[in-house]
Image 1 (tube, helix red, strand yellow):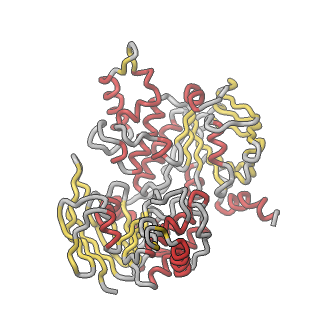
Image 2 (cartoon, one colour):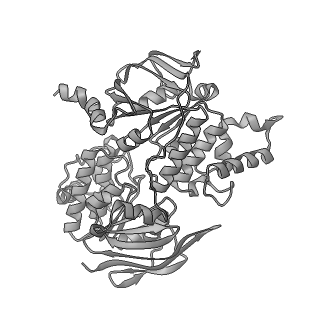
Image 3 (cartoon, rainbow, N blue to C red):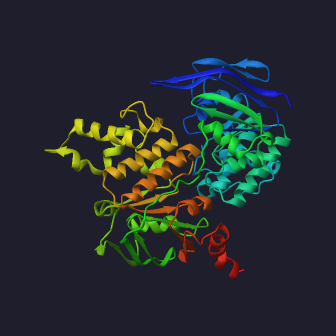
Amino acid sequence: MDDVLEMKGIVKEYPGVKALKGVDFHLKRGEVHALVGENGAGKSTLMKILGGAEARDGGEIILEGRKVEIQDPHQAEKLGISIIYQEFNLIPFLSVAENIFLGREPRRGIFVDWRQLYANAKAVLDQLGLDIDLKAKVSGLSVAQQQMVEIAKAISVKSRIIVMDEPSATLTMHELERLFGLTRKLKEQGVGIIYISHRLEEIFEIADRVTVFRDGERISTREVRDVTKEYLIREMVGRELKDDYPKRNAVAGQELLRVEGLTRKGVLHEISFSLRKGEILGITGLVGAGRTELVRAIFGADPIDKGEIYLEGRKLRILSPQDAINSGLCLMTEDRKRQGLVLGMTVRENITIADLRGLSRAGFIHGVDERRIAGRFVRELNIKTPSVEQRVRNLSGGNQQKVVLAKWLFARSRVVIFDEPTRGIDVGAKQEIYRLMNDLAETGTGIIMISSELPEVLGMSDRILVMQEGRIRAELGGGEATQETIMRFATQALVQGG
């Protein structure tokens, strides 16, 4: 396999941050090359430069032996470089075929040649072995199907290089296997694939080589068969992580939250459970089990048909998220970028936004107090940012998650609900989030944690609720639960139903 891409001495600087410090990277034709590293290590920045979304400040890009200048994404596409970001670049109200050939539709005179468009789109899907309705609106497709459409777009422009940025973040195991199969097919066709993922087990399943980034530098490039997961973690964080899930000595106290008979027709069925002070209660189950729907209902984001919620014995009337916040409940959503943060605002503004009344004097926000409070949370939570005036969209995923947590701590929340708290976060930042969760529990805060990662549920939870089809199927003590018992309860009704 010869090099299809060589990036030499790539430098990128932002105000106060040197994101890339003379990085070298090689990609061979027909290989899957994994990029790993903590959030903010420089992986995505390097790929944005390759894709023309960012301009480099130094270095050069060589494509199949020829030096190239990539000014914008359109030019990258013409050079055969496609990047599939976590947020797909699809038009929801257009069909699959229209999205695949958007801007490149075959024409007969001034009109689109629809017959040829569908024939071309079918040829691309057949090449990939995909069976997707070409006339279906993209908005009606699953996340996995939308991802396949993105890959089909890349193939339609005869891409020599495809970058997949966290492609598995929202996929089920079955969908992930399909993605791997498609990736292997692309390899056989000679396409070079750059695969970015925080899920290290995937690297060993699909990649040929792996490059580790840390603090804007390339630390190492190795054949995957020559490394271990422990080696990669050590290279990524610059230290050895001895315990995946840090231990704590907190003892759960009195009942803090009680939910009785929570029901939403067709979604939730007579859900009842309790949460004690200082306890981490894990909620798990298969995709579609109703976990997120449950906490959204508790938080007042979705209506309920019946049921009652009590906090320290007092019945709450929660008709909206504001009612929940005022009662001392908070929800750290799975989609922190769209639902947990205002990306265009600063770290300072995001931290204080949930309780501006506490900073107001005569109707005006007291800026000195706001900066002091934001600075305190930045220090206490170890949020990596040049200043509290940095726009939150420029932070890494792990640091964005800490800003969301700081916001709710400032609002003095007594029950903190984490929905997939470490999704899209690197191993080092995961440990910091776990430590912060433990610290919260030790202050008597009650924590509900939803997670699809069973090792995380087992490692962090005092008790575990297993959901299936909008019902709680089992309540397990931390000591008695295993991955096997959780999966047995999570799939029980499905197995019985055939």
